[in-house]
Image 1: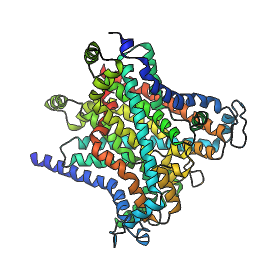
Image 2 (image 1 turned 60 degrees about the vertical axis):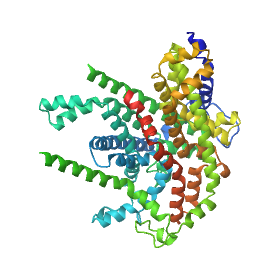
Image 3 (image 1 turned 90 degrees about the vertical axis):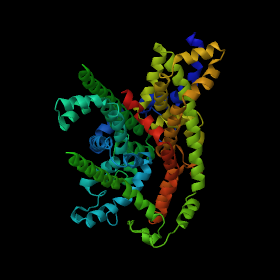
Image 4 (image 1 turned 135 degrees about the horizontal axis):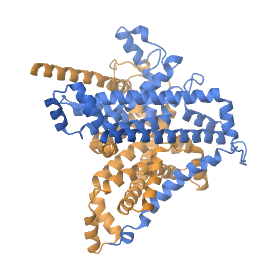
Length: 293
Length: 274
């Protein structure tokens, strides 16, 4: 069979053109536009070299703060979503009444738009009438009630919790799929050898789940760096710039018409994502290689 | 021993259902307040409405221009779903069957898009050059471009499980490539096509960033933008905002409830293969 004739390359034209023109090429051009003074006040675009990056470094207090917030969000959500997601998956993998309905419920927020989830939680976290504070008061923890999205200590943490609420179901589903690939014979053999539950979790379940852990960590890390809608709707980066993240900076500079600078932030985001993706892939595949040997 | 086990299971069940309340209560709050009067909804409490104000939905649909927004969202979602799935299935089919250095390179080229974030400004520039900026068609192609990497990955994995012998038989029977693809492969791909279509539809429906950057005429706004603007105008009428939220999530909710098996299998496809 002539593969060239049977599987013609023109099948690739549509996806390569659409993706290439509207995603790949713009990503490549971003390195150029990040070195220009392109803005909305001036129709001409000048090459300015590393000027935009210098601006970022010069005003670094502001911008490093946003980077710090993005990192806080990334680490916080990744840790919580994996811990809780694994916990939910382990229990829902057992014979529990209504486990299918429970899985459906925990996954439900994953299907909702981040914008809508943000909107719902502007109400839930409202300091005067919000549901969270009312519940806290009702169960006698009224002294914990606070202005969640306004106070310095709680604003970013609240955004983290909203993201965990929205996305923990995704991690749960990935872990459930991983758990179902583990053969029962391992546990039977272990229990004959007298292993307790904790040992089985540590020495069978977790090592066998490494592929799922890898997928979850990678997706969580990459997607958290792109966080935008939740911050945009919950705090708009405020109060002040307390909850500013990288993508709200990109949008802020875009709205202000400083296109070159906005692109430079986008490039930073791209580079950080690339570094995280490749290093975590490398570390995790090494961990997995070690297990298989 | 047996009793203890049963106790443990019962405790776990109760704990799980209690935890599920954390998810359900905020949603219940939205549902209840959507049918309250403005004064009653001002506190967004969990109390039952004194009387049901179903006219809230009427007002949202009329004043929020929801019919327009809904049809925009349907147009954007369905068109981009068609382009993405047609392109990804055909592309991934050839990439998976012809494994040369070149096709592996193209596959890698798509995978980059799974990781890299979009850079909005150069994308706007590109849309301007193509005369697609601020148009629905531009957003359709942009959605497709953003969803293609995931779909190529999804279809690529599936195609490798379809036996090549079927292609050979079809060719021997005199099929041309197009015929073979649409008559033999597409019927076999039905489960993965369902997965791709449903996940892409939800992605497109829920997207807010692209219209925020790329559409500035309100008659083009999809549902997410319409709800956002509605919230800006009616920030003190939480009953209406809650009704708008419900209107906007009904389509994705239906898609999810009907196709959850396919959606979840697609989402975990990557995890199982590792």
